[in-house]
Image (cartoon, rainbow, N blue to C red; front, side, top):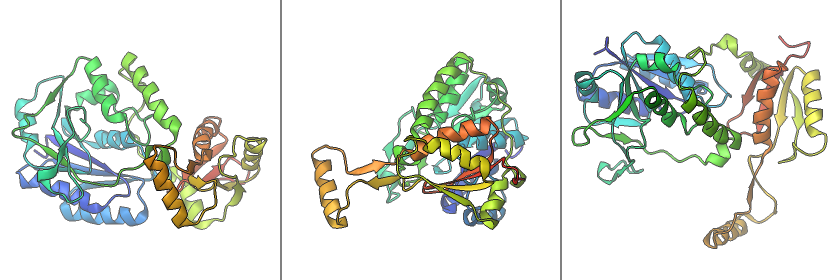
Length: 359
């Protein structure tokens, strides 16, 4: 099976136990595919954990130097596909736990121009399998089995999709547009279980434009399912010069008050500042802020009361990040900056410009 199937697992800053749980569940039921863990920009601590675990489990590991860049599952998958030497590819969400051997079933029942999925169940925090909730057949991203020809026919997952959301649906939709069939394995024999994790708030950790853009990409791909991209390129350390600057250099700092980037001449002053300074940290303030100064206990009571009444809470979203997310894409396209980095809390954005002193 190692010469027939490559399983690609993507991850970023998540517990290494999720990888171990999945690999052990695959092997428990007799499957032995090639497994490639692709780490898209995890912090050094996590990276080291994954590297040691993958060596212990005798599976392939790659760290893509995407630290501080938006999460891009599509690019990580595509890289894994480019490295694969097997005719069949499985993309498997890092949270999956297997309770059977679907790999052999797919090999035995494979038909050309078909992709295969497994019914998925959400595990509760207690990890009680008996209390798992069915996700429904619309959730196909946990397990996608295909021939590598599917990637040739589509030019891979669309790497314009960043953060999370629609990429899991986009790839099968494009394949169906090209005449492929989606087949779900019999639920009586095969089930996937999704390990619990806290749910990220979309409006906090993802810019609103990234969410809206995903729908635009979906519609474009319905018209042109074979997209125009050179998919699966790696991100090596040499491609991310800003990582060395963050570690060893002190940046010049540009401060912007919460949600004030679009006011007055701030944007103009920021562009000028970037042009005249090599390494810049843009302090945009906390992603969530409060307009009213209240005692924390009183704030908690008022917030609870507001939620009970179905009204908006007193916390506000700092839109500086949403605006800068779009501005940085423009600065990159206009070749004004070399590299950039968002910190985990989305409070600071580092920029390496094409100022005369830059490398």
